[in-house]
Image (cartoon, rainbow, N blue to C red; front, side, top):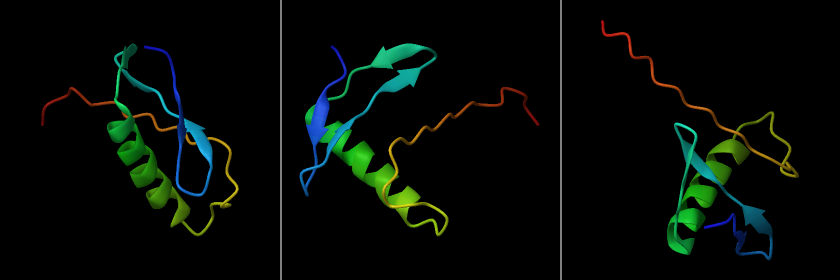
Length: 67
């Protein structure tokens, strides 16, 4: 499954890709739109972010050290 272009309300086209441990995880259109909308809403509420952003990258890495 290749990276698909998703059209959001307002006519903007976006692409999303989810990788877990380097493996691309397929998402249907519904899930892609949810992930895009949630991340976009969180980022755009930050005061230092220009609403005309071009790309958002998020990297999450678990710390396997147990406390």
